[in-house]
Image (cartoon, rainbow over all chains, first blue to last red; front, side, top):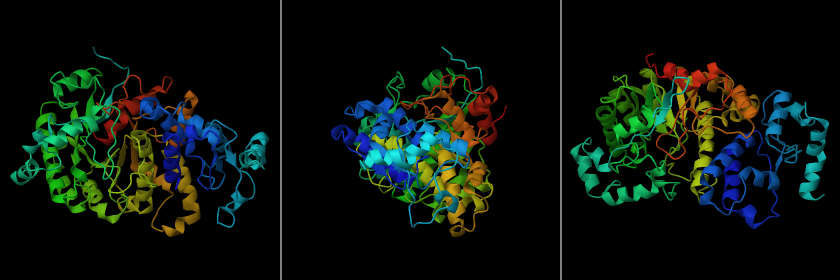
Length: 139
Length: 369
């Protein structure tokens, strides 16, 4: 499923949706997030080589994604260790992107339903549990 | 002018091409020569179109690419023949310039994409014979890939058996976008034949999937095509793992060519988490997916991933734990060529650099020292 999310993000950026609709806010729900850093590195590199094909995009794709896209936490698809997980979140380049979610009533690994993943800094955990969704959904 | 790097260089992805599509015809049986001259996909008008639009044909979509034939603009030989069709010019621009020990040829000429499977098999044989006569014979630094009509397992296996006695053919070659996921049983005869002969199976960027090229349809632009290719690699590897191919063929070695490398660690995390939850659905899997992948999979570097922070390149190697499986490639003569002296970031551990630039390919392809 991560491939489908990646293809849709590629399309939204390449077709200029975020240029045409500057206030557009997109939520990726149940997409996972650990694939995003590598995807954005690749997309930015492709854009540097091919941006003349889509000249309406004025910034690297990763900047559009960080500004316009938010991602739900479940399924947590990062590396098993808490330090590695925080590093992957750091590689997103923004503490604003992740929003807590449970995916209730679907089945997940039980210990991951209890709370935010272990090892996150209090500030990041607060943004993930509360602040990011509040801003994105204007609650 | 030779650009000498401190470490030995083996290039695992070189796209040699015929001087003209007609040049391949002399290697095909008369039946197919006649059919093509009468209006096959490679007739003169089509060939002219390929000069500008490139040589991969997707059903329903063909993207104008960055440059004619997706090639470096300086890769056209003085003769005016297509990029990478002139061995002497390839020596000058690649083999000699970067002092390559070996280069592995990966011609992408459509053999696996023909709807007429018999014609695809004839084209594959022609490509392999052309490689032998016009590339391997005159240039001892080159190694070749066995082209096959991969949508027909038995036909592909037949070609593998035909070519495997020549040790200069170091792998079987498929493209990553196939008609069905590569774990499906229709492709198993390919893996069986490859294992029989101790050959790795290389799977390269590109191909015509006979369906939409992403899981959500066709995009409008080449950038979507090329960036999206990483998802095809992830989806195919997921299929190979989950369909039990690595458990069935314990000696199978898969080389993912031109996929980059950064996408794989996140896929392994996700597959392992899914396996913990859903592994009972795939009872034949003998180990968590990441273990199977690290045992059976090799990767080539180009297009090398470029995280904006240098430290993240180190992290991605740490996450992969596959320093003995990553192999350097240039993708010559294509526009997104990675130069041997510039592709890997400075500061990489010298031993890791040596393994990626040459040592891993030397071991996998059994190249002499």
